[in-house]
Amino acid sequence: MAGGGREESISIDDMTPPRHHHHRRDRQLPITSAAKTTTATTTPSSFISDAKASIPRGWFVPVDDSPTHFQKVPMYVLGQLLGATLASLTLKVLFHKQPDIIPIATQYAAATTDLEAFLWEFIITFILMFSICANTTDHRASPGLAGFAIGSTLLVNALVAGPITGASMNPARSIGPAVAAGVYKNLWLYILAPVLGALFAAMVYSGLRVPKPTAASADDKDMTAQG
Image 1 (tube, rainbow, N blue to C red):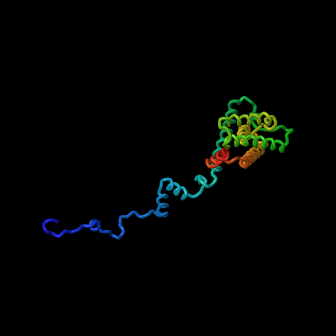
Image 2 (image 1 turned 135 degrees about the vertical axis):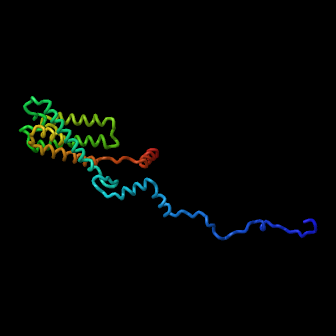
Image 3 (image 1 turned 180 degrees about the vertical axis):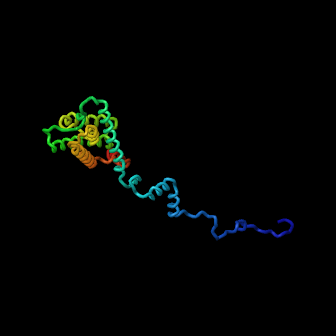
């Protein structure tokens, strides 16, 4: 420096602020897997899932990993029985001048044995339920033709088995008229045969049903076709 003063050399190292070897207290800590798990479980969907899991299994509480189809059966059974009975009683009131209302009941001719009638009801109910499963539960079926296919099956069954057994195919169709007419002869057959036929058809089609392809399997098929 001018003025006779002593010159001082300033190096770059002198201008550098001193380094602190201690860790900063406000440094962000890494998120561990446990922390990630805790954060994930606080989402609304996870909270709802945890709440559902805490509810005990029961008749009116559907659980994702438990079969819930049978929980709806009683309401369908009750609804069909009430509908069939009220319809039959309505016909009885409308045709009150008729001596009886037995013609609406499902009965088979005297020439037909119990076994033959049972087999007829079992077979036609099996065919009807098989058609319902194929047209309403299979992803390969056309939804627009389901009603036509099921209705056609019902029509053919009624044309073939109607003169033989009455073509009930549904216990409610036989129970309702039986209550209105007061005739319960052979009613057990029209309850047991359709139920067994429908159950057997559902089990058979469950074994024949092709699983619905996923997106991954569809991509694999496309790659195989291109290759």
